[in-house]
Length: 509
Ligand SMILES: Cc1cc2nc3c(=O)[nH]c(=O)nc-3n(C[C@H](O)[C@H](O)[C@H](O)COP(=O)(O)OP(=O)(O)OC[C@H]3O[C@@H](n4cnc5c(N)ncnc54)[C@H](O)[C@@H]3O)c2cc1C
Ligand code: SF4
Image 1: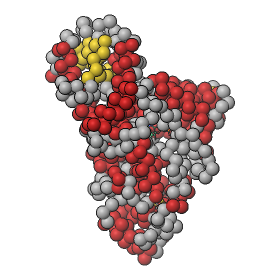
Image 2: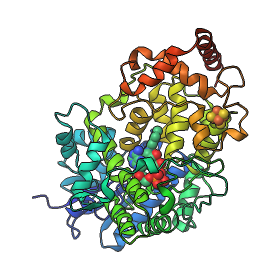
Image 3: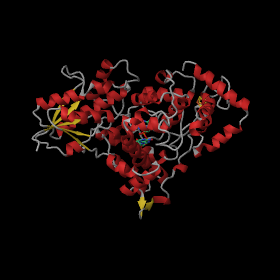
Image 4: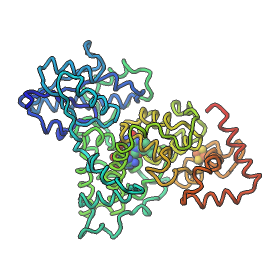
């Protein structure tokens, strides 16, 4: 039996319920948290993302100390900090006379592999515990997927509803249906009021971190201030309650809406908190269910929200671990274009992209439909290398951790996995964006026009994408209708589409 363990906690594991803390002996063991420059620089993270993660870590270390744990906290600018999680862990083992390293499985494959390799290289054994913050363990997902010809989120989601009992009545789905998505596709309209997420004043710890980030990462993407995110469990719970009280009711119907100058609409803005352990995903879903049971929110909103968490969130994680490390290099369309420069600057005349990129720079946030149908859709239509798209998403969003970002980007938005995560590419022309948003009204381009320099680029890029990838997609049943339309188009029209697309893509974007 080990006498004294060193428990390493990473920046996305800030929960007192963490498996490694649950298994520890508080009287003897030492908890280590490291602000590692390796982690802070492996992509050029948004400044707000770094500030959020470091501030939440510092607050969590305080919470641990107050709860009686022996905590060793290594700050980014501590002179002795080597910047490496592994090196700091090895040194701490010696400094504190520990005879075992315990970690809860890291969320990312890259780090998981490093800690697996460390076992055997370090002077003491390394124990990696399963992350119990997920409803479906990695092993359980493997078993669920094993032997299925196709793995689809909807089937997985139903099993997770059965497993949790959420929104069930006599073992049947509440309201007689598993999914109320058809009721959840309303476009926004002018006059619809959004309160947005709850803002918090930075305290002394956060202010110190803001200074640290501004000094050490001046060239990173994004605006550091105003910084208003929750950085403790208590604040994150307030942020969730604020969403429940003010936005949940209309979350469902307007889930897919896009509105100019509205960054958050009725979205919860809690992914960042769940992903690092400040909120527990199942407790969140139970709260949402209870609002429905009390008659305070409609079923389509409660079901829609719960599906995102016990359905999509768990499903993408299962897929990540099922497919890594090969998943990272998938490129079904063999796309190789560079990510347009305007993804970093936001400077583009396309109003929908400009708005999504501007708020990404300001808030390190874009809601799902902006990520999927604006920035993701454009990158796929333009033939951008999916790895570059992935690295951009991983860097710019405050909630981005590879296990959740990669399948969403590479799989869902770029279809680079050829249909593992979704059954067809999320490709859309300007018509979809016009229907769901008010962006087009203030755009230089004409959404009604199909070709020519002033036509909406999404229009000709959409058809060009389908034509370019016809061999790869023609047998996809969900695309048979669009290929029939393409097949029925006049040759001259087709040529014009392809010529305009080729002209557009030949410019420096
Ligand atoms: C290209 C692309 C990249 C993405 N990258 C990330 C990422 O790095 N990190 C991340 O957490 N989510 C990511 N998502 C999923 C989703 O867009 C975000 O979870 C959501 O926008 C976060 O905002 P919110 O908290 O306001 O979510 P809401 O719209 O209020 O949804 C509620 C919750 O459901 C969960 N959720 C919803 N959709 C998904 C999904 N597809 N996958 C996983 N969880 C989901 C989140 O926990 C979210 O907080 C990505 C989606 C796309 C299309
Ligand atoms: S016209 Fe096209 S580019 Fe402009 S906002 Fe609409 S969809 Fe976007």
